[in-house]
Amino acid sequence: MATLHPTALVDSNAILGQDVVIGPYCVIGPNVELGDNVHLISHVVVDGRTKIGAETKIFPFASIGQIPQDLKYHGEPSTLEIGRRNQIREYVTIQPGTEGGGMITTVGDNCLFMASAHVAHDCKVGDNVIMANNATLAGHVTVGEWAFLGGLCAVHQFVRIGRHAMIGGMSGVESDVIPFGTVIGNRAHLNGLNIVGLKRRGFTRDEIHSLRNAYRLLFAPEGTLQERLSDVEEQYKDHPVVNEITAFIRAETNRQFCVPPFGGSPIGGESA
Image (cartoon, rainbow, N blue to C red; front, top):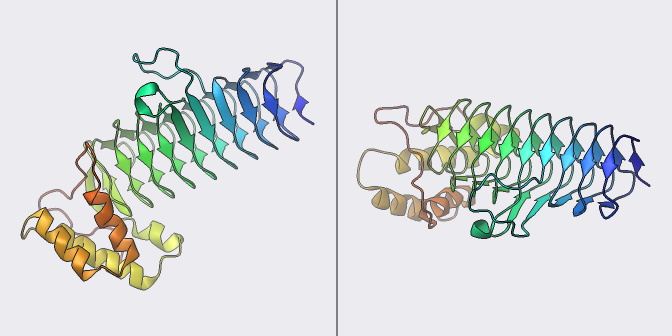
């Protein structure tokens, strides 16, 4: 049975799971579905065709499922699906998809969206992602699991961010970020591998060394990128974590990917 504060406005058609708690002055629209043990603390607005997974907690003044900030949106019945056990802090905005992007925005499980983070239409956010305060995703962005986005960073539309990547605070990300990479800067450049994150996630010493060596080869000054990419694919064909990077680079996309600055550090991060 759900617990509703007397000041909450919950449409009679909304679907509420077991032990949902809806605090003061929340507004819930008719096409919303809240999973078991979802907790809306107060002053939360959830609207649109929005589904929120069990045990997710949403803090005051978050706006979830309102129509996209896209002038091409014309009322199509797009959706927003948010997974389980997420924390959505104050003033966060997450918006549904559009006809031009597959009609759906998705968020995985166990994510943390700190205050004023923004997830725009048609984004795909994986599990265990952290977006720090004021981090912003434009439309059609894909974020792999365990990625960390620093405060005040801004990610351009259609950019892909690979698994376990780290985006430095106040970075402007216009290009794809390889899995396990770290980027930073006004127009973000690759600054090495996310060695600290890899260690925290339990990657082995051998895996980290393989990634470091493959990184050096990929971004060496000699030869063309295609030549270096082929060399790495051949040398590390039996290393799944390296294959993930090479497959990411080879994938068809309308974006370039972030590379190290000319003359910059070839690896970055701390030693394994």
